[in-house]
Image (tube, rainbow, N blue to C red; front, side, top):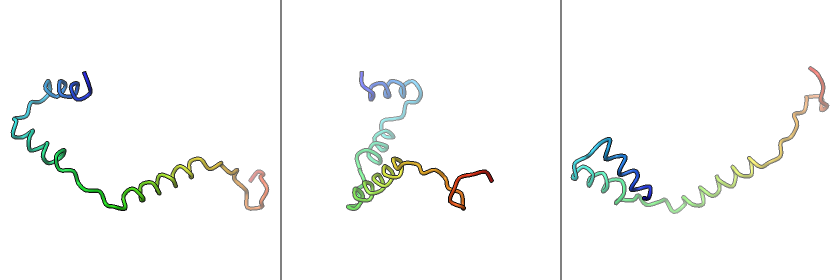
Length: 72
């Protein structure tokens, strides 16, 4: 049994939609994919790279205005 079969079984126990309704849902969501903007990949990969760099940057200890750590 794969995930689709498991979801289909679960859904059959909860709600059963008439065939025309399920066909309409399929046509609207699955069968008609929206084209991606040609710049999507470069934008996505740029944001991903910036996030990875920012998250792996070593943390710098906080400095007090005087330049040396100490009590306030």
